[in-house]
Picture 1 (cartoon, one colour):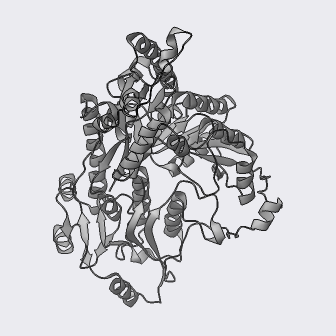
Picture 2: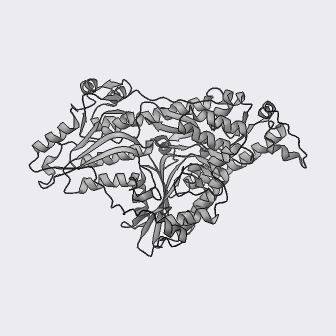
Picture 3: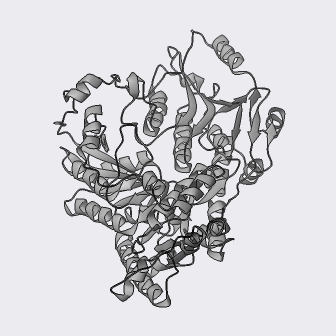
Length: 605
């Protein structure tokens, strides 16, 4: 909710250049194919379940990595060009993509990068290229990093709404934007350290790719923006040339005609059939067949989004990623039934959420270990609080240097609406049986007695969290508590402190799972599995979903909050709104809910 923005870091600008000079001697004379990767838009972890009217789904992130890997070993490929547009990738994907491009470059095939305008994220990717080329009119917005944290306390008070929170440590500050007007000491300490760690990683990547000293790379990344001429003069790029002219130069130097292929891919795409709506409503639409393949398999299970209790409404048109406990356990049950299952890789990209839901998912994962099926965790851009909770029991845990993880702690809170009621002339009376019914009274703050009850409850959850983390990581509980208190860590710091095992991305985690299970040739099967249109609509019409979506729950909630959301959504970035909606949904009435949620989301621009 507190949004960490690395300003000037055009994250997701996979721009990789294939340089033509580095190992032409090792390239077969018959190689005439030059893949041109256009990096634009999102590269999701999981493919869209279905596309309307036969349109091709976009490339997933693993498919993007697979394309680069294929090009490296493809004897027809003589070089590769990566064009940076406006890709939307997260900080962990940035690191893994940079590593894949550096791996391609190590093959000796030229790798060229080109862009018209980019920021720190795009330049980090471009630095993996043998040669960086830009047109005469272009810009490079390398202006460093900063954290922008919004505080909503006064905004809420204008609506007659107050926030109240209890937490298990000074670093568990997820509710702080609603209760404070400025950063607490804990927020300032951990935000500063996190920025230092992430920025240091970006500097190292640029220094390695461009073969310069760290201090020079550090200056590069904060002294912009640069014009094309300034970037060339500083050594940030190698040439100023229009892309078409550059292709013509490559062709002129080649002995045979080159094919510049912008459709090159590392996977075979299934033909997308347009939906047959007549068959759908007559109940005769085709369903997915159950796999009978009993060969060795690694299940790649995606756990993406905030963690909530129960189920969520399903839509054939997709929606924001959410880990609903009952839905996700159903997915894990499907994994357990997969013929030939030898190991699991859990891909976690989650800021956490419900403590109850996190514990139920953790328990289901533990049963795989009890059955002798190892599982490995690959952390994405964030696997913190509840996201760390569901990861900590794995045989091995991987994260990227820029992953945000840890945040071992618990928080509980709510919005107090008494003043908002008064502003609307709304009167409320009650008749109660029992002294503790005031815990659910949203019109007033908790009493001292009620606060003690809630603190006891949160302390019990925190005891469980730290105890299980200690068991999972093979550490003393006292050490976990030292690292906990809600504090977030970068992947690099998490490795130093024993909270993870290795630095690496999803492909490294898959290799580790194959090694642990001793199945070097096991195929990878993704979960949740894609469903046919018929199956998706059957789920919707069957009424199996028992809860409404988070969005509709919020919209139907108390008027001042709904009105505030409308006003805030007009001025705040969507990342801020996502966390605000999450808190307002979770805190609206159920004060018994303990949360394991981290304080930030992060973008590198």
